[in-house]
Length: 451
Image 1: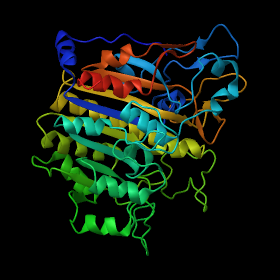
Image 2: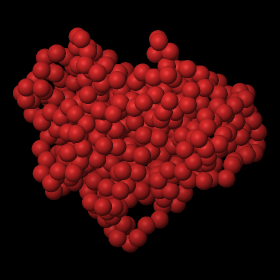
Image 3: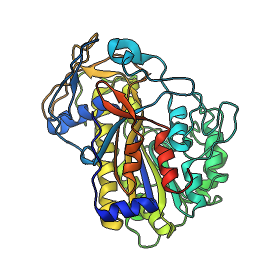
Image 4: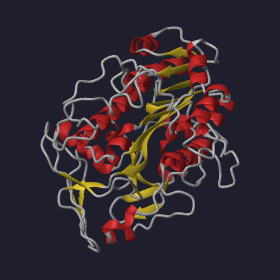
């Protein structure tokens, strides 16, 4: 996709020069261009400028672009390179050989660190450089300027992407240490996600707690009110926070479900072993009605943060289970998760226009990496567009169960969006202008006068 020139009013340009009061970054974990189009085809029967590419071809066939999401209409659009420390992106090589992007890819920890700090690190590290030194992140910079800060996710709150915006740990797998640092040793104001030790994948009480993502000690401290946070653990609690005139200063919201809000729920589209059933339709399984949606959690976070500081906010929201579906090559649940993410971005734009303005708020939508190497039916050795009709599963092919080194999309709107646009100095023969993932936080920091 070619870069689209940012447009805006004189007021927007003046506000951008002073730096955005609010910065909201939404990350679709594992979300590539095709993931967005898979959901768009199912939901609306449209795609957004998909490409047909033959290796080594001089020309690229591109389908007409039809915006299906609110963020595809943002005035700034570009692509992002996502590789970890020591890696790279070769814009010609990746289109000359179909398997080229299956090597050299980032994990979510290194990608989150890059997006949060503006520095690349090794896979597995969260907020630290290759020597284990802490790298200051956007939430810390925002807090130092008096802004309220928060992270929201549809997967465990101690998982890599939210953790990368809060903690400094050398290993992403030590969930207990990550959660403990977030709860006890950070200045974050809002943390919301899944990972309730007392609940199963359908939100039902477990006979014995599963403390994979949160230790028994820290869970008990939250429940007993012995942490700096007000603890919220019900869908009604999240909904109340979203509309309350007065809210707690700091909130930890734990959705009453195991690792994911909806992705892992049981249903007829799952085998007894929890594996996806081929050809199953989205929403074949009843949703977990007692579990908040990512949109509801984000609305709650926005209200809490909006009340918490007169200086503005920094918020990161992750659609985390897009990645889980990509790893499983699980098309129907991927579409569900992508639609949930798209709906959450819509909620953020509604909040900006109702409670703030584009003159004082910057919204960035992007991904940490692509997962699953999703492509159209019949792809390899050439790239094929996804096809399908509204309400039907699109025709696709998967070529990996892991991350790829593909470019991922970026969309931006609001105060300072042109600073993000200006960083897109790379040129890809198919996707057009691209920037490095580390350029996103660097642009924000420069807008805040900390670059």
